[in-house]
Structure formats: structure tokens, C-alpha cells
Image 1 (cartoon, rainbow, N blue to C red):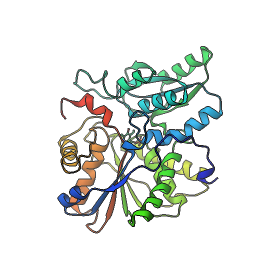
Image 2: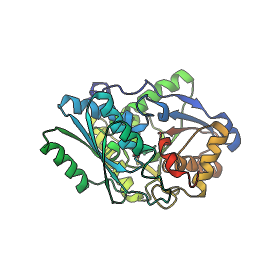
Image 3: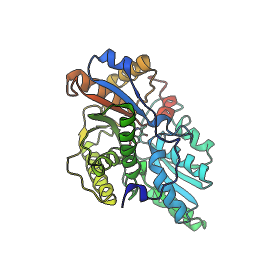
Image 4: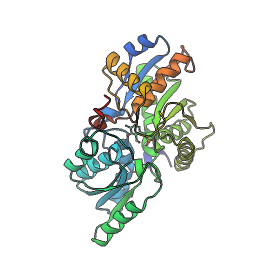
Length: 331
Ligand code: PLP
């Protein structure tokens, strides 16, 4: 089935902004760097990559008569905040499981940022002690059962909206949108650099480019510090999404595991210095969990020449700034 035939509820402003990063490019003295900005893609609670993915899941939830979106993530999950936002926007209820993915000393870590926004959006949050992982958790099953027993109709959305049949479609659409923007701007990106966590952002891009017959290098930057599982997830979701689009993935998935700083959710000096450089050259704000790490990768790959000086590179900015408030100890 063609991408355009998959039901979708528009939740973004339209195509996300695409623009050159001239001062960062000049500073690095290498490849030409641009950004495509999912961090300002929607008016729904600061937007981000999840809002784009949820356009397809929300259509399914509404079509199947569900009244409660149920999802799971870390305390500072951007994803759960986006699910809460989409539920509010569509007049649905929202029940979240918030796990203690990151052991972080900032005393307000579990009170501000994403979790605060979800509260404001009217979602209920259940706090659970559990580490990072994208598998199906008992706490999540329990909330689904409780919604059911209370007479509601839950719509289950796994972590990051990734391990869901429709999870890759949002970023397959991103690939098609990018091609149109490239034509209008007279530019072509050889390489895309993207932070990879639960996997469906990168997987969707890979499937989307395959469906369009476009061969692009999509470098996923592992931020989970569990690259074996992450790579398997990206491959699985890319193939599943390709099948939905009647196409096949021929190139292998690229996942760079050098920039996760050892632990999900904790930055190292390289992450922090990349965040400072992006902020001080471009006023481009990144977070220590996701785009700080993919920005560190981009800077290093240009510096070492792994991204050639002649390349035109796209930094996919996926959002994540609301979590910054929980990191005042280092930023
Ligand atoms: N960047 C931000 C800001 C995110 O919230 C996420 C979500 O996990 C990612 C990158 C990674 O995206 P994905 O989980 O689809 O791999």
C-alpha cells in the first residue's frame, strides 16, 4: 500500500523547517551541515519526533474507538509527554507508566520537564522502578488491564511508539517530505545523522528512502548503550515498515555505537561540549540524552573525515529540550 493511503491525523504544522547551519559548518571547516527540525514541528506541547509517528497511531486509535492512550517511558520521556499531548488534543484520556530509567542526582529530575508537562496535559502517571528497555513490561500490561476493567477502551502504544506495526510510517513520510524540500532548496543530502533510541525514527527513514528508490547513508547514533538490541530493533522495524509500503530494504542499517557515553540518559564531556558548541554557534538547543549525543557524533565524524569534506550532511533534530530542566547539575 502506498504511504499516502495509510490513514493519518495531521498533528504537525506541515513540513518541519530545513535550514543550513552556516556558523557550525564554518567552525568545523568540513562538510556542509544542515538541520531538519522536528523540535519545532508542531504546536502540541513542543512537538518532536513522536508527534510525527503518532499521526498514524492516533488515526488507528480513533478508527478503532479507543478512548484512552496508554504508554510507557522514562520519567523524562519525550515520548510519553507527546502521547499526553496528542490525547489532550484529540479529547482522549491518557494513562502513562514512568520508569526510573536514569539514576540522576538532580533533585527535581522526576518533577520538572516532560513529567511536569504530562501532568499539565491531564495524563495520569504511574511511577515504577525499572531500568531502560523497550520490551513489554508488566507495569504497562497492568495499566492496560486497569483501563479495561474500568470500562475504558485502551490503545496500547509501546515505548517510543516503535515496536508497533505503524511505528515506522511517520519517518517514512519524513523521507518523502525531505525529498520535496531538497528539490525546492536545490540541495541533496548524502548523509543523515540521527539519534537512535527505540528505533522507529531511523527505521522509518530507511524504509521511506527505500520506498522512494533513494540510496542515502543514514547514520543512527546509538544513545541506549545497548547497541545490539537497538540494531536488532531498527532492522526489524525497517523491514516491517518496508513491507507495509510494498518495498524491501537492501542496504544494511548503520548504527554507530561510539557516542552513547556509556549509559542511557547520562552525558559525558564530549556530549556536553557538543551541546555548548551547537548552542554557541547556532543557538541550536540540544539535550544531554539524545541530540547532544548525535551532535557529538556529527562533530567527531566531520573532524575525523568519516564524513567527507565534500559531503552535504543533514542533522535530524528530533526534539528533547523539555528534559533540559532536569539536568541543571551539568548544563
Ligand atoms: N531524540 C529525541 C528527543 C527523542 O525523544 C527520541 C526518543 O527516543 C529519540 C531522539 C530517538 O528516537 P527513537 O526512539 O525513534 O529511536
